[in-house]
Image (cartoon, rainbow, N blue to C red; front, side):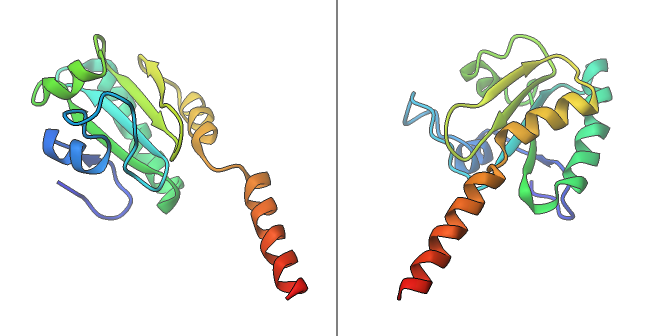
Length: 141
Protein backbone atom coordinates (compact mmCIF):
# COMPACT_ATOMS: atom_id res chain seq x y z
CA UNK A 1 0.00 0.00 0.00
CA UNK A 2 2.11 2.83 -1.29
CA UNK A 3 1.50 6.37 -0.12
CA UNK A 4 2.50 9.61 -1.79
CA UNK A 5 4.27 12.77 -0.58
CA UNK A 6 7.38 11.17 0.93
CA UNK A 7 5.55 9.47 3.77
CA UNK A 8 6.23 6.13 5.39
CA UNK A 9 4.91 3.27 3.25
CA UNK A 10 3.28 0.25 4.92
CA UNK A 11 4.46 -3.04 3.44
CA UNK A 12 2.73 -6.39 3.68
CA UNK A 13 4.59 -9.67 3.15
CA UNK A 14 4.13 -9.71 -0.64
CA UNK A 15 5.19 -6.07 -1.04
CA UNK A 16 8.20 -6.67 1.21
CA UNK A 17 9.32 -9.53 -1.03
CA UNK A 18 8.74 -7.43 -4.17
CA UNK A 19 10.46 -4.23 -3.02
CA UNK A 20 12.98 -5.20 -0.35
CA UNK A 21 14.12 -8.83 -0.25
CA UNK A 22 12.53 -12.09 -1.36
CA UNK A 23 13.59 -14.37 1.46
CA UNK A 24 11.62 -17.31 0.06
CA UNK A 25 14.13 -17.65 -2.81
CA UNK A 26 17.37 -16.66 -1.13
CA UNK A 27 18.82 -16.76 2.36
CA UNK A 28 21.63 -14.38 1.38
CA UNK A 29 20.68 -10.71 1.79
CA UNK A 30 20.20 -8.86 -1.49
CA UNK A 31 18.34 -5.55 -1.34
CA UNK A 32 16.09 -5.00 -4.36
CA UNK A 33 15.85 -1.22 -4.03
CA UNK A 34 17.99 1.40 -5.70
CA UNK A 35 17.79 4.00 -2.89
CA UNK A 36 18.66 3.68 0.78
CA UNK A 37 15.73 2.61 2.96
CA UNK A 38 14.58 2.59 6.55
CA UNK A 39 12.18 -0.14 7.67
CA UNK A 40 10.31 0.14 10.95
CA UNK A 41 9.04 -3.13 12.44
CA UNK A 42 6.20 -2.12 14.74
CA UNK A 43 2.82 -3.04 16.27
CA UNK A 44 -0.19 -0.79 16.81
CA UNK A 45 -0.24 -1.45 20.57
CA UNK A 46 3.47 -0.64 21.09
CA UNK A 47 4.06 2.62 22.99
CA UNK A 48 7.69 3.15 21.89
CA UNK A 49 6.62 2.43 18.28
CA UNK A 50 4.08 5.24 18.56
CA UNK A 51 6.88 7.57 19.65
CA UNK A 52 9.09 6.64 16.67
CA UNK A 53 6.36 6.87 14.00
CA UNK A 54 6.08 10.71 13.87
CA UNK A 55 9.88 11.01 13.80
CA UNK A 56 10.03 8.73 10.75
CA UNK A 57 7.26 10.77 9.09
CA UNK A 58 9.29 13.94 9.71
CA UNK A 59 12.48 12.33 8.39
CA UNK A 60 10.70 11.04 5.28
CA UNK A 61 9.86 14.66 4.46
CA UNK A 62 13.37 15.91 5.30
CA UNK A 63 15.14 13.33 3.17
CA UNK A 64 12.71 13.68 0.27
CA UNK A 65 13.49 11.26 -2.52
CA UNK A 66 16.93 10.32 -1.16
CA UNK A 67 15.70 7.62 1.26
CA UNK A 68 12.63 5.38 1.20
CA UNK A 69 10.77 4.85 4.46
CA UNK A 70 8.75 1.70 5.10
CA UNK A 71 7.03 -0.01 8.01
CA UNK A 72 5.99 -3.60 8.62
CA UNK A 73 3.30 -4.50 11.15
CA UNK A 74 4.69 -7.46 13.11
CA UNK A 75 1.19 -8.56 14.14
CA UNK A 76 -0.18 -8.67 10.59
CA UNK A 77 2.96 -10.05 8.94
CA UNK A 78 4.80 -12.13 11.54
CA UNK A 79 6.60 -14.16 8.86
CA UNK A 80 8.66 -11.14 7.77
CA UNK A 81 9.58 -10.42 11.39
CA UNK A 82 10.55 -14.04 11.99
CA UNK A 83 12.90 -14.09 8.97
CA UNK A 84 14.83 -11.15 10.48
CA UNK A 85 14.72 -12.48 14.03
CA UNK A 86 12.71 -9.51 15.27
CA UNK A 87 12.05 -10.24 18.94
CA UNK A 88 11.47 -6.72 20.25
CA UNK A 89 9.82 -3.68 18.76
CA UNK A 90 10.41 -1.20 17.48
CA UNK A 91 13.27 -2.61 15.46
CA UNK A 92 14.58 -0.55 12.58
CA UNK A 93 16.59 -1.67 9.57
CA UNK A 94 18.74 0.96 7.87
CA UNK A 95 19.52 -0.32 4.39
CA UNK A 96 22.15 1.03 2.01
CA UNK A 97 21.83 0.08 -1.67
CA UNK A 98 24.72 -2.36 -1.13
CA UNK A 99 25.95 -4.26 1.91
CA UNK A 100 24.11 -5.56 4.94
CA UNK A 101 21.46 -3.58 6.81
CA UNK A 102 22.13 -1.89 10.13
CA UNK A 103 19.75 -3.22 12.81
CA UNK A 104 18.72 -0.91 15.66
CA UNK A 105 16.40 -2.09 18.44
CA UNK A 106 14.25 0.18 20.58
CA UNK A 107 12.95 3.71 20.27
CA UNK A 108 15.54 6.19 19.03
CA UNK A 109 15.87 9.96 19.23
CA UNK A 110 15.61 11.90 15.99
CA UNK A 111 19.35 12.66 16.13
CA UNK A 112 20.15 8.95 16.46
CA UNK A 113 17.85 8.15 13.54
CA UNK A 114 19.57 10.84 11.42
CA UNK A 115 23.02 9.45 12.27
CA UNK A 116 21.99 5.99 11.07
CA UNK A 117 20.41 7.42 7.92
CA UNK A 118 23.63 9.29 7.16
CA UNK A 119 25.50 5.96 7.38
CA UNK A 120 23.41 4.50 4.54
CA UNK A 121 23.49 7.51 2.22
CA UNK A 122 26.05 7.48 -0.61
CA UNK A 123 29.09 9.42 0.48
CA UNK A 124 29.67 12.82 -1.09
CA UNK A 125 33.32 11.89 -1.65
CA UNK A 126 32.24 8.88 -3.74
CA UNK A 127 29.89 11.10 -5.76
CA UNK A 128 32.63 13.71 -6.33
CA UNK A 129 35.09 11.06 -7.41
CA UNK A 130 32.57 9.64 -9.86
CA UNK A 131 31.83 13.09 -11.29
CA UNK A 132 35.54 13.91 -11.52
CA UNK A 133 36.10 10.71 -13.51
CA UNK A 134 33.31 11.62 -15.90
CA UNK A 135 34.62 15.17 -16.44
CA UNK A 136 38.15 13.86 -16.88
CA UNK A 137 36.92 11.39 -19.48
CA UNK A 138 34.97 14.10 -21.34
CA UNK A 139 37.98 16.44 -21.42
CA UNK A 140 40.19 13.72 -22.87
CA UNK A 141 37.73 12.95 -25.65
